[in-house]
Length: 272
Image 1: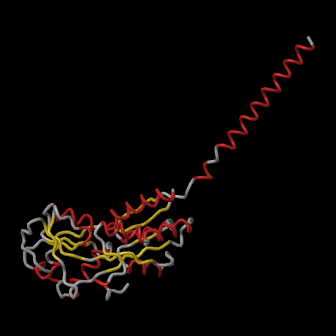
Image 2 (image 1 turned 90 degrees about the horizontal axis):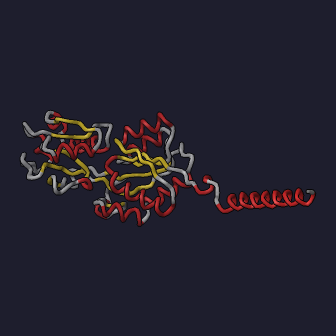
Image 3 (image 1 turned 30 degrees about the vertical axis):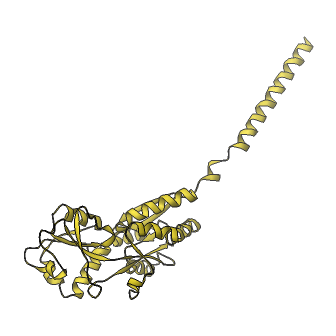
C-alpha cells in the first residue's frame, strides 16, 4: 500500500513538472502582442493627393509594418479638425499656406516640400461650351464649378488666380457650385453638370474630360508640404513616414500619378 502511494505521488510530480515545462515553453516561443505591435499613424491629407498617398502608405507599411490611417478632406477642414481634436501624427495639406497657418497655431513641426500642385482648366469631354482660356469662364451662360474657399486648397487658389487675372467678379456670376473637395469637382465636370472648372493637373481624367493648360504668367502654382504634428505620440514613426514620402521612392510614386516633384526647373520661380 505504501509502495502504491509512493508510485502515485511520483506520477503526480512528473505530471506537474511536464505541465510547468509546457507553460514555460509557450511563454518563451510566443512573444507578447505588445512586443511586435507597431503604432498606427493618423495622417491628415488633402483630398487631391489620395491616390498617390494610398500607394505610398501601402508600400511604407509593407516595408516597416507601421500601419497608416488617413483622414482625407479639404485642407482647411483638416486644419480645424486637428486643432479641435489635438490628435494625429502628420499633416499634408494642398498648399504651404495651410501649413503656415498650422505652424502659427503651434500644430506642426518641420516642413518638408514634396510636389507641385498645378491648377488647370478642366471641361467635359468634347468641350461643349468651347472653353479655351480663363477668360471664357466669364462668358454669360457658362456653368462654372469651383472649390470652396477657404475650405479647399484648389478653391482658395482658384479664386486667387482668377483675381490675379481680373476675372473673379465676372466668373462668380457663373458659379453653379462650390465643392468641399477637389474630387467632387471631377464629378461635376465629368457628368457635365458644369461646363468648366479649375482642378489640379494630376487629377485630370482623360477618358472623361478635356484639359486646358493655363499659361505660367497667368497661373498660380503651389507646393505641397508635409510635416509631423506636435500632438504626435509616435514621433519617430511619424518622422520615418514623412522621410519616406519625400524620398526618391516616394517621389517616384507621385511621378507615376502625374505629379511634378519638388524641386523642378519647370517651376523654379515658384516659392513656398
